[in-house]
Length: 193
Image 1 (tube, rainbow, N blue to C red):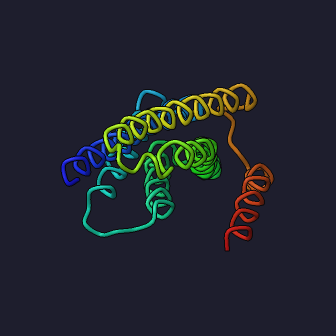
Image 2: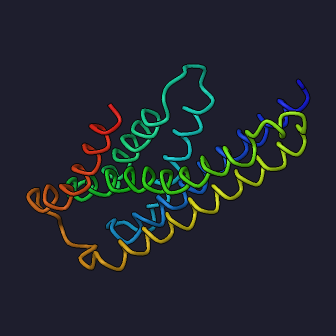
């Protein structure tokens, strides 16, 4: 049984590490048209990847949402370094990307939970550990693909809808645009706790 646990850990760590790199690429692609110095916006994606890899492999255990919030906060500072004049827009982009990660994770989690319960947890599967592992690998790939397509669709949609990418965002506009996102997050918080 110890041998199969090793492979499960490899799949779990490889998928979460790959997801960090993909999200860093999405973060770069998401903020690229909004920043004034486009050629340096790769720093935002690089910062996100570096911080998230550090938080993943540091010995201190923390919940996922806390790690993602720290990663987004530090990338907010990186965006402010690149575009100091538009802190409101940088804050809006950071919060929006954090919520987009949360939404893509939630969209992939629902089918993953249902399929995990139906395919891997039935009593007849408990003696077929390699079949369970194969199904787990399939579920991880499916989850990764779902997160990828949901995130890609959200980034493309925001790029299409938000036409004033280069304009300076006013504080009132920032609060107005973030209101639905904060209400959704507060609703989730109330529902969970």
